[in-house]
Length: 88
Image (cartoon, rainbow, N blue to C red):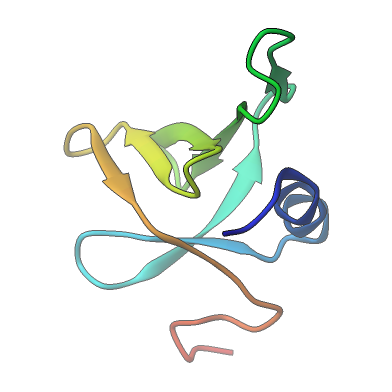
C-alpha cells in the first residue's frame, strides 16, 4: 500500500506512471489540489492527467480511476525514476 505523501512526491518528481489498456505506461501529471476529508481521515483523492485526453484521480485505494479517451476504468500505477516502457 502506497501512502499519500509518497504519491505526491512521485508526482512532483515526474515519477508516477499509469498502466494503460494496451500495456504501455503513461506519465501522470497533477491537475489539481489534493482532496482530504475531515470525517474520513485515511481517504484522499489526487486529480491527475495522462496523455492528451485521459484524466482521473489517484485514490486512497492505491488505484487510478481514469476517465477520458476510451472509457472509465480503474488502473494500476508504478512509481519509477525510469520509463517502465523501456524507452529512453
